[in-house]
Length: 402
Ligand code: AMP
Image 1 (cartoon, rainbow, N blue to C red):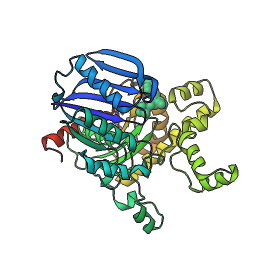
Image 2 (spheres, protein in one colour):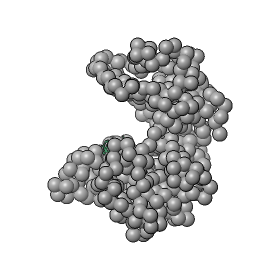
Image 3 (cartoon, rainbow, N blue to C red):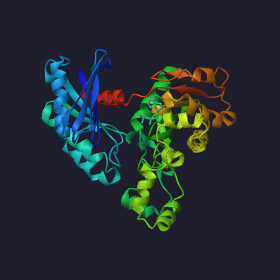
Image 4 (cartoon, helix red, strand yellow):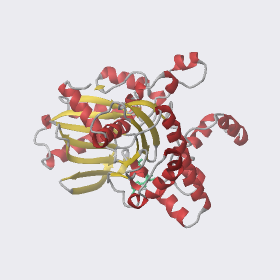
């Protein structure tokens, strides 16, 4: 059975077609810069990569291009072979604690969550409708980035504001990157704990341009760092992460700007970019830091320290830890940043790390960085959100979703 995993963003449409249950990738690619005359369409299959620049003025055109490419290249012979289209949805709010069939009722609920995710929610709905039109017989499913975090207890997800306000406006920690954390925790349990989740405590670190940490016990999330929106938690590429809330009011006063203007600074101009004054990309930060740029060095240390703080918090929350997993763009590819983080936590947690090995792990490699005597295992595991999205779509189709 062919299952298409789709990640529709405001101006992009990423896709990956799987043969399930074998989990074989048949092709992958994306339509980028949707809405522009010089949009980019990419497809890779059978080890070949193709890219063309052309006008893609809306998502429906992007979907049409994908479908046409699949047929032209003989990746599918008949569109009915694609039995499931499974969509990534960033915000599931209070409604979704697991993946569901994407129908009009689901669409209505996602639409009602737009205030919590104005950037992605409209794009998800456009993506859903565009595929519905092109592949009316396929089952569409929705896989939520927040769903994995729905197992948290109130003490972990509530903010200490008046309880009536939390209840009235559904204000709470929803978390993000749940599909990635779920994949990483499952993969860690399978590869390093004999597939037995019971009693296993994992601190999963998804560190990319957006970053979040999750504490999991028995394979389930007990705490996660992102909050109501993806602004909370650890420091990120351009986002502040957690902050004393009074900084908002004080800065608005100092700069004579509105809250929404300050909010924009917190979201787009802070983090690595704001502290370094150079870039939100760790590759640029590392290059500048190695040349002795003081702000680059400071931004890298601050970034690592905020992650170390959360690891410490989750170590306590879990009553110890059996494994720390590092993943996503930075976690998978940056020995420099991994070292900064691990050096900050190794003494307290009794880690014994093979830093020589650390230097060789990037570009999609999985590796155990901790040595035999380390009190907690440390692993780099490449994340695979699309596979998780396809798996859930397949499970819903076959009636096997737990
Ligand atoms: P993600 O959001 O998970 O795709 O992560 C993207 C971020 O990972 C970039 O902004 C960089 O800061 C960082 N990164 C570091 N090394 C690499 C690399 N070799 N390839 C891609 N991203 C990298």
